[in-house]
Length: 62
Image: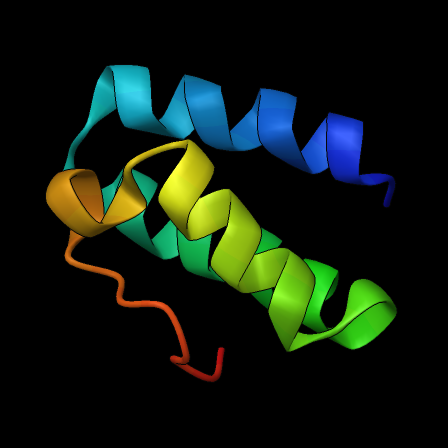
């Protein structure tokens, strides 16, 4: 998965904002982590404000 696609999918999950979407966001971040590493995950968390939306913190392993 490209980072642009992950960004797009995560933005959709944030817009919906339910517990189910939190789980979907975790799966997306796990895929990003596997393919692009922790730095990319942390960047997406900060960029999309996922700490506020889903309480994900930079440095979290998915």
